[in-house]
Image (cartoon, rainbow, N blue to C red; front, side):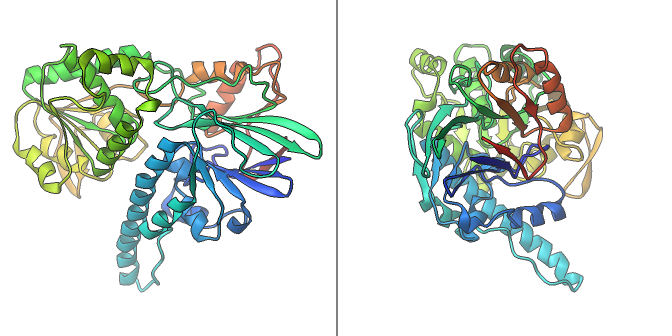
Length: 467
């Protein structure tokens, strides 16, 4: 029984882990690596193993850095089942198609430049058609229901509390009379997060090996209730100025959290009843999936629905825009409103147009609610630069910029420490993935003094472990 880490090794993208048992090969996640464009394309195109040799895949959740290379896996010869929760399957359906569209669009643009330089064209990593061809491989399994992906493995999905349908993967392994229990955290969510149930910790499950993420191992998160109060305050101050609140937000998870907060705040009278628009095709589609899976909601969400007598992601002043014309019409309005639009780092999509059309008005607010990568427009706005370039033109920023850092869907340092500490005295080893070196080293230091803590590893790519 052997585990090999092929992705999210000393980095936060490209989750991909292979278990070999009884002559079978079981892949946990198959995500896209994200980095420099040239390196990213080659890395994602070529697998470190033969895709046709993989017998089954188990998917922790639908985020692209965990699911995004599944169409390429299928295109390259994989012909087995992909196990996922019901909600993960439905989110993957829309997200993989969207990813295929982006790959096609990016390659079309790239090939135009290559043609002018006399260079041969390149093919997209995969297409929308490849994404469509991937979906028949999915097999939906409910939380806590046992299934057998390959010989000698009994698996269960356990609530991870990260996004809709997200799960930790618990595996009971047996080979040649030897038994072992393995837990893969996937991405760990946060307790008391809106909409979703809290993550279940692995302590008490008698886990032998814990494979866990460490994305925020070097930093604690602000309290979620404090972040909610900050959000309400920013919206109210902007309304009093007569301005718009423009929120760049990721389409899956963050957008739905913001809609829930606005719903609750307006219903409770904490924010005046103003128009709220969700203006992102993928976010609209993802919100539809969220509405189809209320079985994933937590008790707080059900209490809110019961109290205010309307769905968690719908209320009277909320509009989900579909057409480009509806999106453009928002720029002709000057009344106070909230516009939530993608992309989350302000690098593409409709939000670019909303920022461009509202950046020069001091009454407006651009509200940053997630981490922004270096060199992105979102980072330049978060750094409050006065002059930025949008669509190749310079714009002087008069709009206010506010940042709220407490809305991350990932567990912070405190919960990560508690998560790992829960298996002290039970597990034989802990393996940290999905994190940068500083995050992992800081978390390892936090874990070191804990009594009965097993060895904690931070492996390079292609490192193998006996299970």
